[in-house]
Image (cartoon, rainbow, N blue to C red; front, side):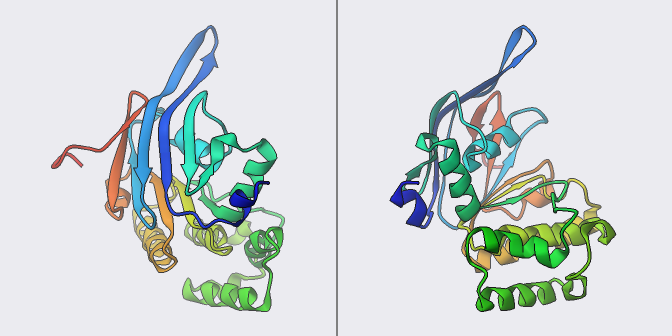
Length: 238
């Protein structure tokens, strides 16, 4: 992996002219059509739009899970779209935290093992980091669940662990795809308050895909996906 991609600290996301389409039978469906945007360092941005409008596709492109048909994705000084698949995997492992609607905890690992995994993958499993892990579990009232498996946790508990796992290795970028979509309203508020608090504390840049106005309200700014194009809503129409 290029030295710049391995050692830098991410400061912003710049998307330029992104195009992405998929083959559906005999038709080509355009998902992104000249999508461009800039997200500043430390900013929390909500990405909103109708179902199927390309929000999750855009998150996958930013993370390097997929590549656009055209356009450029730059995270700080790294052009993600120029990295090989292996380089993108290393980039994502070290510099990106991911939170999903359905938690995606590894069912055969305990809570503690799920949280240690990103530290082990990044060679960061130091005594200091293990102490921090314990402190974070205390902060979210789940220290007693350290040796439990995900299937005995409630949805809210699993999502709190998923958020801790996404940020334990101190990425500068957190991408969350409908993080409250599988939770009731009250639990969703607790989870989003946790995400916001920890992201602010660590000065992380965050992009949240959501259908919820309540979730979007924690963001500094909204971006709307409409007909494959990113745009900021007009004042009074957020």
